[in-house]
Length: 479
Image (tube, rainbow, N blue to C red; front, side, top):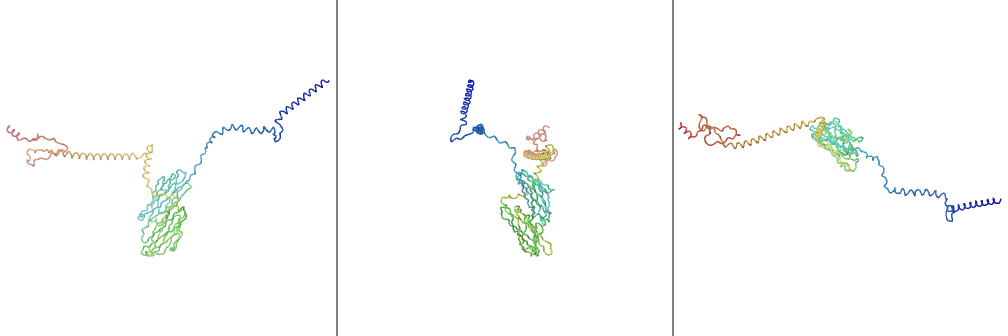
């Protein structure tokens, strides 16, 4: 019975030894990882160490792989398909209208004048633009014809025009105008209206006359020029008017001031016994009686608006009246002009001198287009016919010249031949039984001058009936 108990004890000892050995091994391997911290040391949880190191090590391992990519050039940006928007188009133009001037021929019955409309395309980023417009003449004036140059075309029947102009392009319209003989007393202002889309301009048409040759009255006016200015602004001026009675009797005098658009009459002189407005742009001043040979001088105050200042020069008129007792009213007219130096930085007015009519140029272009159409199988041109006629006339002229030169050359040759022929004179003996003596000598044979007779030998001419005296004596002795 002791043997089994001894075996059990041995087994237990072995088992205990194994447990002690396992515990010692566990302590041996666990102390470096789980050693207790000493003085001045901190402990770190064994589980947290791998979890904190893994995220920090991943960027460090990835950085070397991304470093070569940074040394290469960056890829170009993707192409943009949308182009930048174009600059906005500005539709704008400038227009200048001339004054219809009637000279001294008007008082002789010739009321012809010219109206010139100049248009310039001052737009931006528009390329080519078209200005359309029309003109309206006042009562007493009629349009008799019109033409355009520089890209402008007219429709005389409708009193309208259109100008297709490139940027900074200039075109002109010339309108032939006729003014009635009595219209100088009451004629007003016309107007030209033009537009490009929503941009529109209106410019008045003024009529200027020389002083009519009216006896018994004399009128003069003057307006000083406005001073120079940097920008357009409202300004004032004084208009001097002098009315003189050149008649033999006293007469009641009056003046009427016609102002251009943008100009207003604001003050009247003290010599005006009364004044009133007789029209939108016309004021009347009554001067009372003026003795024969006397003159009345007045000065009227005017204001010029900034818009009118930019459109200078402007034309106005003054009408003078004298009414002698028991006689008809005498009326005259004198035009005045408001001027000023151009504004700083403002372009000078467009030229309004009438360009020549392009009738000849238009005819050439029309003929060229017709010839082109005929070459294309369209309408035939008259140029071949005209060319044939001209060629025929040239040939006839050449033949005439050749004939005249040939005739002149023949005359010269005939004169030379006649000089050589006069040395030989051929005489024909008288007929038997004819008269004797000097009268029996015959004249030169009517042989053509162009023929030259051979020189005959000395002695009697054969067959002429003449015989030598010796031969005649021998014949008689033989008989």
